Length: 607
Image (cartoon, rainbow, N blue to C red; front, side, top):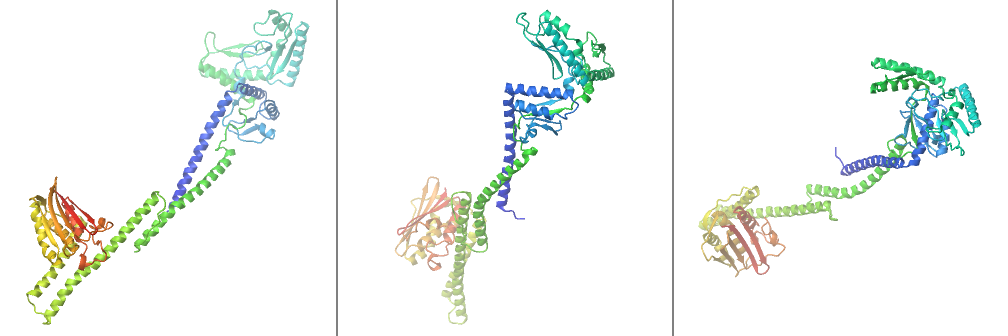
C-alpha cells in the first residue's frame, strides 16, 4: 500500500503533539499540586482552622453511628470558616459536600485528602492530663469510658442537673464558675478572683480552690455512660482473648467507676505485641458504635487534574484543539514540502518516458531546492549525453558508410570491368580498411575504459624516441594540410610507460592539433623533465578553443564547433581516449587555449 508523505508527516506531528499535551498535563498536575500544598502547609492560621474542622467532625463521628444528618454541621462549618468541606468514603464515594449544599457548584476535589476521620482509631487512644489554666477537662485516664460519650437523653438531663448544682455550690463559695458540656466533655470555666488571686483551676492551682472543686463537683458528673461501659467490657474481653492467644501476661484491675482495665504486669513494659493487641481490640469494640471512616477534603481543587472524571472533558477538548491546530499547520507545511517532491516525481517519470527536457523549478535554498538543482543537473547531463550518443551513432554510421561505400563501389567497378584491379585500387581499399580498423579500435578502447579494464604494460623507454615516432606517424597528414610539425627535445629522458599506448595518446594530440591548424601554421611537440615527472606539450597555432568549451574537450563525442563533422573534425573520440590512456599511466592531461592564437595540450607522467 502506497503511503503518502503528507499523511506520514501528519501522523508524526499529531503523535508529537499528543505526547506534548499529556506530558504538559502531567507536569502541571504534579507541579501545581505540590506548590499549592506547600503554600497551604505554610499558613499557620489555615492549619488552625483545618484542625478545628477535623476535631469537630471527629467529635460528631464519635457520637453517631453513621454520617446521616451531618449536612447541617457541614453547612455551619463551611459558613463559619469560609472553607469548602467535603467528605468521601475511603473508596472515593461522595458522602457530603458543602459546595453542593450551598449551591456553589461542585468542582474537582483536591488531589489528596486533608485527613481521614476515623472515630474508632481516635476514641480508642488513651487520654491523659488536664487542660491548662482557666479550664478543667474531666477525663477518665487510660480507659475507653468517655464520660460524655453517646449519652442517652436521660443521662444528659441528669448530668446537666448535677452541673447546675455544682456551679451553684461554687458560686456560694465566692467562685464565679461555669460548667458546660462541650463536644461530649464536661468543662468547668472559673473566672479570675482579684481578691484571692485565683486565676483558674488546673495543675498547680491554689489548694483552697481544689478543695472547693472536690466539695462541689460530684464524681457522678464524670462517670462513664452506659454505652461507654458496654464498649469497655467488650474491649476488655477482646484484649484478654488476644493476649492469651499470644501467651502474653496481663493484669486486670477495676477503677473507681467499676470499669475493668487490662494492664501489663507490674514492672514490665508493654511490648509491641501487647500494645497491638490492646489497640486492635479497642478498635474492634468501638467500631460498631461510631461512624465509619471518611476522607476529609478542604478547599477547592489544588490543581486541575486532567485525568479525573471532572477534568477529562477539558483535557479531551484541549487535546482536540491542539491536534486540530497541529494538523492544520502540518497540512500547510506538508503541502509546501510535498509539492516540489511531487514535481520532482513527475519530472522523473517524464524523463523515464523519454522526455529528456524535463526540469523542475528551483525556489529558495533549502534541502528540497538542492535536490531539485541536483535533479536538473542530472537531467542536463543525461540530455547532453543523449545528444552526444545520437551524434556518435550518426558519426559512426557516417564513418562506416564512407569506407564501406568506397570499398563496395570499387569492387563493383572492378567486377564490371570498369576499373582495373591493379595496385592503385588495392592501396585505396587498404586505406579504407585501415580507417575502419582505427574506428573499431577507438570504440574498443573506450569500452575498456568504461568497464575499468583498460590495461597498460609500462616499461623503461626513451621519451624522445616515443615522441619522434608519434610525429613521424602524422607527418604525411601534416604535409597534406600544409602544417609544419616540429619536435623540441633538448635531452634524452627516460619514462616508464606502455610504448604503444603512449604513442597512441601523443599521436591523438598531434593529429587533433594538425586538424585544427590552418595551412601555414605549425604544431610543436615539447619533451622535458620537471621535478619528478616527464612532461609532453603539444602546442599549435590554430583557431583555439572558446572558454565555455574548454572544460569539455576531453568528453567523448564532444566538438567545440558543432558544425564540424567527420570530414573536418573526426569522430570526437581521440581526446577522450587520450585522457583514459594518460590516467591509466597515473598521469594527467590538461588543455589551455587562447581563441585565435592556438591551443596547448600538456601530458604529465610520473618519472
